[in-house]
Image (cartoon, rainbow, N blue to C red; front, top):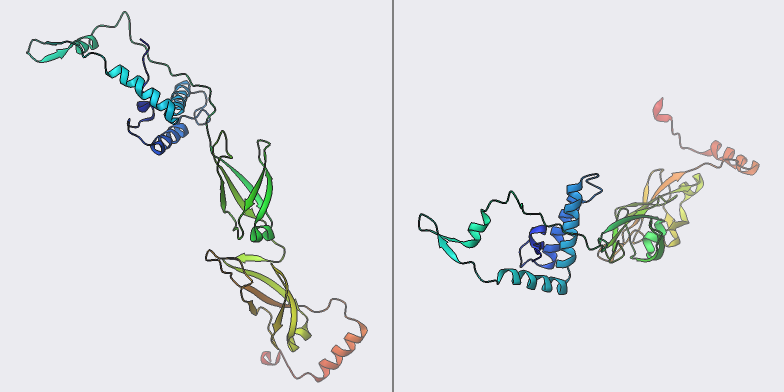
Length: 288
């Protein structure tokens, strides 16, 4: 009679193991004996085939039930007749058979042949998206290394390095883990839940103050600059930052820089000259 391989022993789990326990055991062993980890190792290759075959049977409820019945058939045969040894202790015929000399006919190791069913495997892919897309979310089409094209519905408020699990989109029904990187923006920088940017002012705007238009991730908004604002000073636009886990938003931090005109007109130069003649501020007075 053909010997029935004990798939529970192959995976190192009990007969009452749950589906999750079987899956965890399989994944642990698959990582250990995978051919990519053990190149040119025939024993590891055979072990990998064995655990693949065992998982193929035990992960399917119907096939597992049939397999359990086959195991039950091997244990419900008539018990071997007992005998006694010289010390009067009972020994079964099975015990006597077990210790026979098998030099002429040694027992053979049962070879488990993989069913050919491809191994389910989780995979990871990377995608770089612009900051505006990370903020807004929405549908994004991606192309995987195996040539497949998928449309992913991304949530709003994605942060750099965040992973999205796409169930069943891996290899043979495994999962796809999409790691998202947010591209560097030319103006904005995400700092936690706040968005930071630098806004230049002219000398007159810094001195006189007033309303200016400032870009935000939502578009242009008006911001009031106080009189006499200093370079490096930060102004705050409330609720114009990044979304939080609680559904609120951070702030936008606007750092002020002051730029002089690169090519002032003749009229501007005349006005600057008049201003220089009448201004009372002496920035180097403390140095003398």
